[in-house]
Every structure is written in structure tokens, then in C-alpha cells.
Image 1 (cartoon, helix red, strand yellow):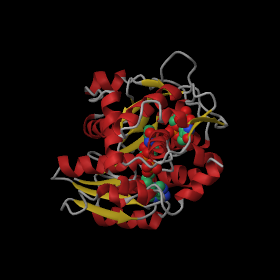
Image 2 (cartoon, rainbow, N blue to C red):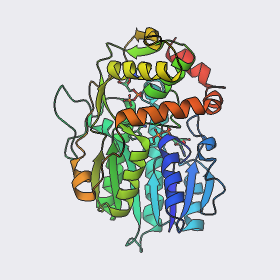
Image 3 (cartoon, rainbow, N blue to C red):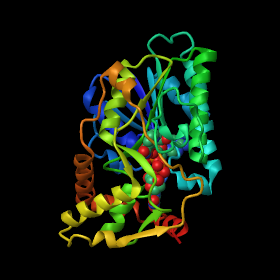
Image 4 (cartoon, rainbow, N blue to C red):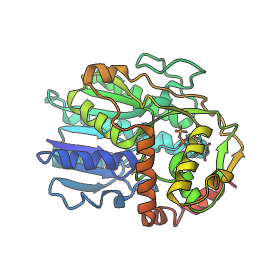
Length: 347
Ligand code: NAD
Ligand code: TYD
């Protein structure tokens, strides 16, 4: 099989690429990535010389380029992760999210539809989405696959739109697709603009930890390697025209998570207990901030047998270890434009 993975130089994509390259020596994995600020080939150093791996630098907005690579490599499957992925950036620049997340996805859909027209049988378009499309929960309840879409941020609106397009191409053109909606991921190689890696980096540098609003917002956290395992399973065993929710069964209020992170970081850095939590600083809330996300992952559990393999404490510990052992990676990604972004966002 020739498989196209888009966004493979990003956080989740790099874990998916690594898993497929290593687990499936009989497949050839093509990683298409535009290498935006979030894409980093350093994430894939350990697989870049494998015979069954090829990196293709390109933009999913470039339909001609997509046409050329589909023609040349005759892909059997697409696992589509390329996206603008950060809510705060979507608030400052919604159009960037419309371009990549909506138009880029429709470009890929058009090409897959046209190339697979007479040979759909063993093809698969796998679209990776987020639980944020469902909007915000109150104190109770869980998102199921039947929860109506109700996105609140430009990011989640763009992801919701791309999900609808994927479904529409399934209904209208018979494109064989599958979609998964996953909760918040954490783990190695996460760009330090999202909560966990940003706060790990700030603790290392003794910088304030900017908690939005009252810190009582709740997210359901999943270790990125468990997400990659779920993606592998759904790609191979999921049913066409179905969606599956993926989640960690692991809800945390931001402030409790931040306090746990501070405690673990104090231990790892041999600092006195309480040192890092002194850095917690409550700042202005994010506009349109969703109160709570929580996934009911029982469908993927019952139908495909997936469940997370690590506890949150184990995953967080592995994550912290990784950042402490890969400070060069952190230095590289926080040089250049990062400082400008940081100053703008947290001025
Ligand atoms: P990321 O921002 O770390 O990586 C995105 C990758 O896409 C980068 O390598 C970037 O260079 C590439 N990219 C961006 N625009 C592109 C374009 N126009 N053409 C080609 N490549 C482009 O994102 P992530 O956190 O790894 O998320 C991957 C996917 O998973 C996204 O679709 C996201 O919506 C979804 N998702 C993320 C989470 C999460 O917690 N991070 C949770 C659920 C779903
Ligand atoms: P984030 O990692 O941006 O993921 P998402 O918004 O997609 O859930 O944020 C996770 C939670 O942490 C969210 O409630 C916003 C909050 N947050 C902060 O309090 N401070 C920060 O600096 C960031 C980036 C996020």
C-alpha cells in the first residue's frame, strides 16, 4: 500500500508517521507537509532514512501539486492531519484556518474522488478531527458520535466544516471515508503554544504560567501515542462512512492539571515543592472559551477494542522526561518567530 499522511511533521502526525513506518514495512508512507511554524522534520529524525518513508514538502492548498503526487504515487489511502490547530491563533487570524482546514481539505477530497473514481473498493480517506466541533458541555454529559455539531471558535468551526465536506463527499460521490473526533492530546513533540508544553517550557525558564480566566475549564486529555494507536486501528478496521470518538476517559480542570504539572516538574528539576506553582498567573480569559469537553469513547472501545494504554500520570511523566531530555528541540522551536508570537499573545 502507498499511504499519504498529511501534516506528518506536526505533533500528532509525526507519531502516526513513525508508527506506520515502523509497524508496516510493507507499506510506503508519504508524508506531505508544508512545514509551517508547527511542522518540524526534527520530529522524524529516527525514521527519515527508512526505505519505506518519503517526505514531500508541499501545501494542501496547491491542487496542482496534489494532482502530481496522486498521479505519481497512486495512493491507496490518505490519513489527513494537516491543519492549523491552535484556537488562540484562529482568534487572531481566522482566514488561515479557512484556507488550510476547509479549502485544503476540499482540495484533497477532489483529488481523491477523481483518482479513485473507478477503483474505490480498497481505498480509504481518513479525516482526523477534534471533539471541539461539538461545542461546549455543561457540568454533565459526554460527547457521543450523535451529538450535534455546535462549534464556538474559528478553529472548531473550520474543523466542523471540513468534517461536513468529508461526509458530503461520501454521500454525493461515494468516497470511502472514515472520521475520528479526538479529545486534547499531549505528549512528546508538542509545540509549546498549547497548554501542557507551553507550561513545561515556562517552568523550565521560570516564566509566569498564564492560566486563562478562573482556570475551571475542563478538558479530556489523551496521550498522543494512544491516539496514534487508535488511528492505526480505525484506518485498518473502522467501517466506511462511520465516525468514531476517541478520548482519554481523563477529565481535568485546567488549574488542577497545572498544579499536578508544577508538582511533577519540581520533583524532576530538584526544586523545592511549591516553587513552580508560584509561577501560576491568572490572565484575561480566551474569548468564546468552551467550558468543558469530555468524550464518550465507548463506540471505538466496543466495536474496535481500543482503550488508552497509559494513565495520565504515566503519560505526563513520559512527556516531562521527553522535554527535559530534548531541550535542544525546545530551543530550536522557540527561536525565531516564536518570541514574537509569545509577546503578541501574552503581552
Ligand atoms: P500541528 O499544528 O502540530 O501540526 C499540523 C501540521 O500540518 C504541521 O506539520 C504543519 O506544517 C502542517 N500543515 C499546516 N498547514 C498545512 C498546509 N496548508 N499544507 C500542508 N501541511 C500543512 O497539529 P496537531 O496537533 O498535530 O493536529 C493534527 C490534526 O489532529 C489536526 O487536524 C487537528 O485538528 C487534529 N486534532 C488535534 C488535537 C490536539 O490535541 N492537538 C486533538 C484532536 C484532533
Ligand atoms: P489548549 O492547549 O490551547 O487546547 P484547546 O483550547 O484546544 O482545548 O488549551 C487547553 C486549555 O488550557 C483551554 O481551556 C485553554 C487553557 N489555556 C490556558 O489557560 N492558558 C494558556 O496559555 C493556554 C495556551 C491554554
